[in-house]
Length: 181
Image 1: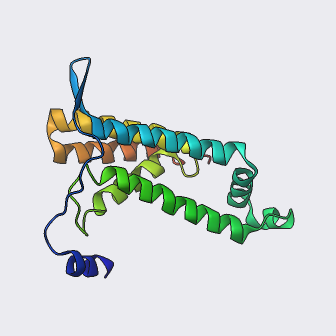
Image 2: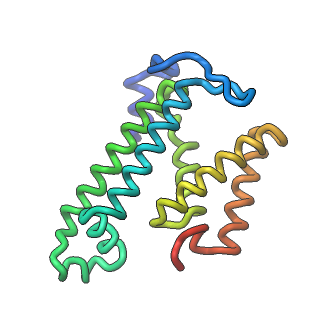
């Protein structure tokens, strides 16, 4: 329903967003657009910040305690509703920043979210639920598989390769690469 309303409000034509930076950087014979490097840099900073928040602060400790055993965390004085609201707000902020840096790279339309959501879900499952490090590792693995598979076999076959690797990882480690069983 939201997607259909988006088509009505924004129209059927794809929209573009002006880039924050322009140009190409040559690195070891590879041409890299500066806007993608900026997006990658922002992603690294955000992941590092999220890691520090979750593993080095009292709020992160409360988040992990609720994830492990909400009832016990509540008995120890953790306000689970406040921590949950903060977690959702943090998720919204991260999604908004990601959208702001991805928008100049891709054309925008109300139906464009299916592929990123599917890949995000796949990366979280392969990395292991609740593991930031596993998610980063799985994201790098999926990115490399898509890039190399796309060059060797074509874009559509690369998706098959990514799903085959996901199935293989889940057969060997059902909790994901760094997830807890």
